[in-house]
Amino acid sequence: MRFVILASVFLVSASAGCTADPFSDRSVESLAAEHVPETEPSPAATAYRIVPVRPIEDARAIAAAARPPVDRTADLAPPLVDLARAEPGLKLDLRYATADNFMGVPLYRTARAFLRAPAAEALVRVHRRLVVHGYGIVVFDAYRPWSVTKTFWEAAGPVDRAFLGDPAEGSRHNRGAAVDVGLYDRADGRILAMPSAYDEFTPRAAADFRGGTAAERRRRALLRRAMEDEGFAVLPNEWWHFDYRDWPRYPVLNVPLEAAEGVRNPD
Ligand SMILES: [Zn+2]
Image 1 (tube, protein in one colour):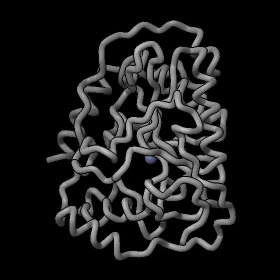
Image 2: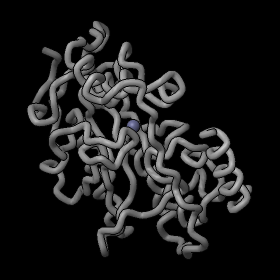
Image 3: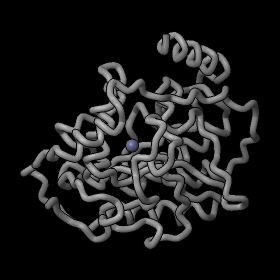
């Protein structure tokens, strides 16, 4: 049933959008210089929720007793940096610290965001570069303790697992080398619409989805270009997810967010 719903969302969105994307291969400066008016808003986002195969408390207990993978090829260990301290202008909207996520319960005990130092510095540069355009970076998720990825996996069934990182490998978020971001309006703090909602898990979330409004696609292109210019690469299926260069060289970490500041290596 869910696939029927997702397919119909895709069809509605695709028919509402253009067939060509004039915003690819454009510089940050040229994208920002052009005024593109808002048109029709995108169709309402579908709130994705996994169907748990076991109670969340049981999934948490399994995760707490498990050990993360050891990647002996990871040879870089710069410290985790608190993004709010690195740049107070970064907006944090950490969905996993609230019940507003695909699990429907808070997964983080504190609403703090961390990245490895080089990735944090690069993200701050992106944020500051967007200032002249009236935009800032909003962070939806950054470093994610491995136990949280394991909790997702243990709660999810086989279908939902297709959208999740495999804890046997450890995700890029677990390494402190991936970040989920969007744009906010510096004039009023409003988080700006993109062609899909964050964590929507539909075809509209694809980085090259051609539906949505022209203004949404322009903002998505601006975000992507600004991130790529600082060493991040977008995930093709998620416009909001960016991996920092050399991410395989950072080891998987399992320290909780409340103790993450300055951490470099696994226990
Ligand atoms: Zn992500």
